Image (tube, rainbow, N blue to C red; front, side, top):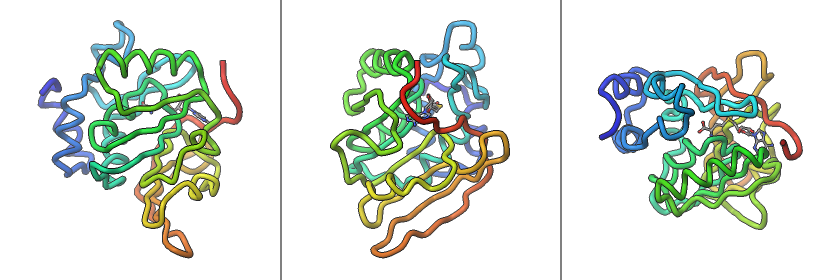
Length: 208
Ligand code: SAH
């Protein structure tokens, strides 16, 4: 285990009970996603800058979202918002394949290097506006958005298998957002509110 015991406490105090999620998060070195000056904060429950005005998500929220996805080792997962690649690598440890889309080419370049350096080979990633998913891929067992949508994106619900789960923040970017769990059923979707969160907004088009 790489993480200090204080990190396990942060996760448990945030309601993360899934042992496999806790174990995985304790074995993924969060310092590797941060610039040297920020690495001292890696094991605290903080969002930290990763460049292009974007942030690495709170460990407590990464854990909660991962837990709520109820991952199976055979799952194929779509992630919108690769960012630094932290969440992608946690997912990659718990499922079969991760397809991750990021709109900032410079962030994705760094994330891809981390996937290689950390020998994570089951993350497929690309630069695109992820609002329609990952080019020619789908359906997925699970979908996770790590940026905040205005509303539940039905284009992405369409990419889910029946019985599939999507976890996403929804709301105004400057106000408190709702973390939602969407379960796709045969002829409807179930929506469960998990809590309040604060994510960067989901933006249109490709960034710099
Ligand atoms: N998953 C990251 C969090 C990254 S922050 C982590 O593990 O910490 C959210 C990311 O979503 C940002 O990098 C942002 O550029 C990206 N993003 C925002 N809108 C997007 C869109 N339409 N398509 C793809 N990525 C998007």
